[in-house]
Length: 170
Image (tube, rainbow, N blue to C red; front, top):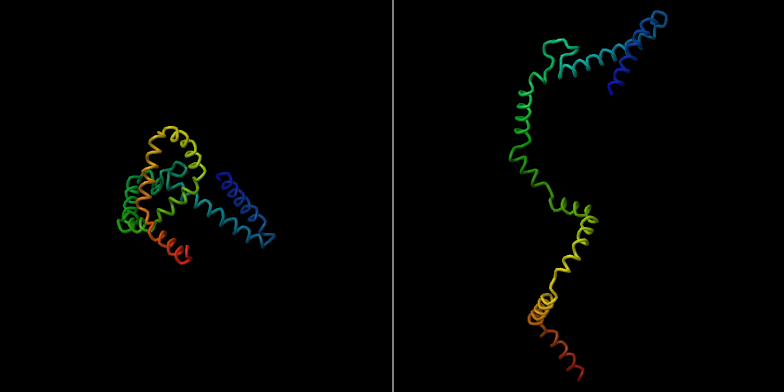
């Protein structure tokens, strides 16, 4: 980027000089000279402004240059105060936290990680199955089945079957 900027500055300065030389014979070159002159002055002003923020231009200790190094602590404190006052207030953070949809974010993340999560689960399942005790599994399944039968409400279904059988004369 520096090479491009320097190249553009050289082209504009050269154009300004050549247009100045030829404008006596060709009056419309005054427009080219004005354009190149404005571009050259603008480039030099921008260069000076940016350089003056960080150091002394050309090493000359011009007043009001090297602003950031000389005032780094004050600038950092001002920026911190600005951030705290405008963005890190309890009201602002609360509103931001309430506007976030954590479930959608988690669902999106899980959707993007689907392949990796499935692969990890498939790697772990054989070890989990190998660690199970067959007698314990059968006992839990039997207890679960017994509990289901005891809790099942079979009366309405049996009543419907009996009502149907009686109405058909069986």
